[in-house]
Length: 296
Image (tube, rainbow, N blue to C red; front, side):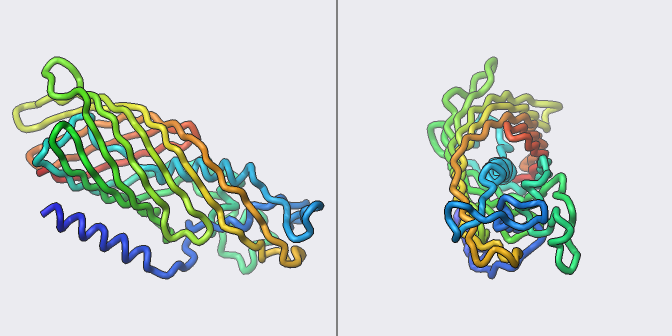
């Protein structure tokens, strides 16, 4: 059965990749990351007449915060599923973001300079949250190991991530002691015309399982994660500016670590599991998410 589930998820990912990209509310418009004058137009580069001055610092800050939004959630304790088990889950996350001018420049639906808001219809400030929807599949293996895959969709955009994970519980199954595990994941961002992004994640988790009333299992878990983000913006032309004379906006790529701390509670009754979770990151992004899953 799990082979069919994996095949179906891969098929969905392929279909999403093949979809044409139409600008949606929360798609990215990185061509606005230029240094602007008092009139709102991009400033020309005094050294290179074919370029405008880039707001590289603003892009770097946005890229780290965006990575903290789409980085994989956890929703599993340190203990593994066992060599014959697997878990299928659906996760909904409300991601609280700092907002500000960098997000206003990045998101398609926002224009922070009213004189550039041709035709109206755009917000004047960035939202305070972005919501994501995630499909998560895990398969238990012998020797306290797990393999998994996930697909995370940014609601209100064309963008989604797809990736895989490996977990090893190096200390589990003892009655009086908690379980410990390490996990490694990789995810890639798809369907963004302006940005390529790769995310490598390593995390350490600890958890302890308790039985309640003979039919409910509670398992609080917590841990630490570090995400290595690599973002590569595409060469763009700030075409909104009638004075740029076809100058290009060139943004450099950025690679940076993101530190995260997570806390959650898994509840299982029969085969059905539910887990609320909170993640706090070094980029002032807060993830509040819920997982509804089935364990076999």
